[in-house]
Length: 337
Length: 248
Image (cartoon, rainbow over the protein chains, first blue to last red):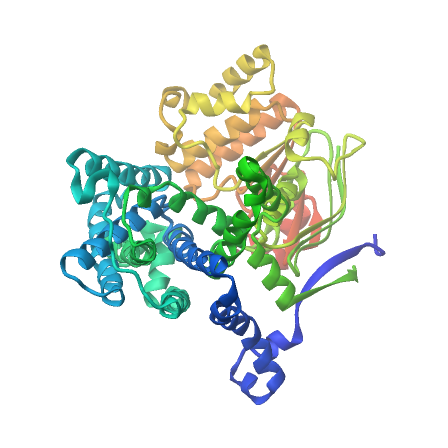
């Protein structure tokens, strides 16, 4: 009995040392804290420069950021609020059409129409989702899945906004640098803002609702209002992505309500690791280029893509980010008992 | 009948069970007493094997790392690596803490799920027996289990465990949240079950007084370690134990 061994996980000394304010006293501790964040921020900011000679991959970078925003929205709703939301395509569609309308009829420039479209779109989405907030789990997911389908049919049937052809001749960005940095910086800002929000008081209440909404209600908090706020933030991200997409494609059409915008963020969140928002972004950064690389397989692309997803999920079900951060913060050793 | 030696369980780096050894002989009622966080529930999960499932689940979602060590033999067979459903087939049946009934199924359905592995004859006989020792259940058979009162739920939970034809019944805090009157009813029933079915029973409880009259042997746990064991009378005579677990 006494010779048996057990694998023990222990926090690295440097993690403990850099927990408090004293981390500032040494460069090593500061580096330890900043390095992972710097890797992400610096990497994303440098990407447009590095990809300058590969215009195709510059577009991929934009798509990465758009999916990163959608994954963040999904992760936020699923793992913080407890609402499984398949409405990514709904958000994108509403944002896209919103930006197109603002640009075409009010002649607003992209840099103004995108935030405005995100704002109005988020309000619109929140309003439509408001009656469904008491629903939980799969029922909420189905409602959010139905809305984009409904929107496409309405637009088709009434020939709204150009009908099946969509709205053409939307103003583009003109300058590729503005086009890229606007989105990259916005993604980073939203990522850190949302992470910040989730540890503030509001985030505390939001996570409480996920765990036990009755107890939150018993504390005298109106959970519908809080949930609506959370939906507003998430759909703001989604509509922002959609509005952006409309200006990049210079077109807003029915394919903005495509199911891809709902499904791929889920895959990204699962692969990257849910519950930290950063994992969702990491998942998008990995999955979108992967699906581009796999174009070499031609028609078998989706098959290979799905196989890779399945293997990753089975082998590392905890998500990549959780695994990496554990390796970063802790070490393992065998101890005798 | 059941012999556990050197059971150790770690949740991440926290030691939940420290070298626990436990014996339960044929047709014996064994009590395990301890305060909150003494490791009673962990012990039950370890004996029933549910801890192995928890271990896998935690590993899949990257949560806590659970380490289980020690040997468990049941009727001369080594079972420490056996998954919980196989242990249940051997006859080790857990009636979990807080009942864990299927709230949307009726009491009848709950009992039937318990009898899934039993033959038709066995399940009919056991159903009659359950209704005999717990007469209030008779009227409630069609009611969804979630709508029962605490005591009725506990009866249904013990009934469901009995339907699985246990040889060793593990009752995890069966008196949780029951009024003293109901506690007497449940304890009487446990005693009658032992006599009628000739099975062994392990009961955990925080407050030992209602349980001690029916146990043949008892263990006391503190912070994951077994601190004392003895027959019910021996424990009653010990002044420290009296103060801590009998509220005298």
